[in-house]
Length: 292
Image (tube, rainbow, N blue to C red; front, side, top):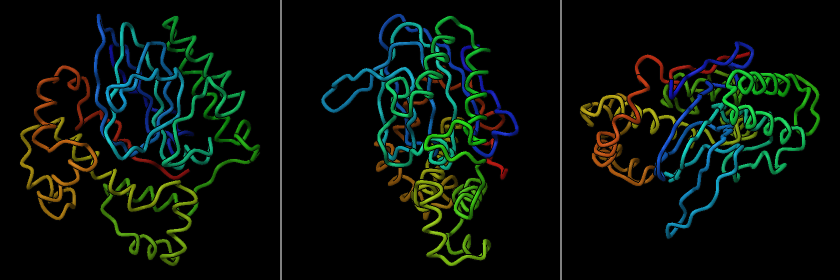
């Protein structure tokens, strides 16, 4: 199967939304566009990939990276056989386990940006992907993240198991509510002051509640349009809590660099690249975070 969605073990569900295994082959160079996302990603790849920068400048993408939570679209080129294993991390997992938070630059794991232990594990995972040993690659990733979550290998030597504070609990509520919950309401439900929750949210989650809610709503919108391009935009805007259709269009232009109509046309011309994922049944965004 070219693309596969794998649920993480129960112990990692508060931190990891899903694993995604991708197996692609392109005779020539293939261009991809990625919309802004609400998660961070641990990505391990055995293929050749380049990011497309300003003026068409190509920059090689490291084979093992931690990145995500982007608020602009990005472009990438892949070539030949590309085997990729990705762990979709909630923002607080990237911060708690790796000390990474929005809007920090991507970490090159093989280059030692997350420590020698991370570099060694990343090397073993990419080596397994190169030999098509997906089971070993996934097992290595599982074991590593479980060890990090327990505090055994965490950067900085915290040495204790991670627990969710008020900031993370508020973020989890935002995911469950599709980004449609005011911080004042969250503060009241958690019995803390608004200022305290704002401070704890940023400290624990690594991104402001407003930015995270915005990304959750936008990604939900473009995933729904990718799954059902004929969805009326006015109804979609209402269902997702946008002020109106104009507000939805504005968010597409600011975050995605395209209008909803242009995005729909892009999806329709590349339909075969998105049909592997049924948004209503097995989209990883429907695997909502849980408290430990």
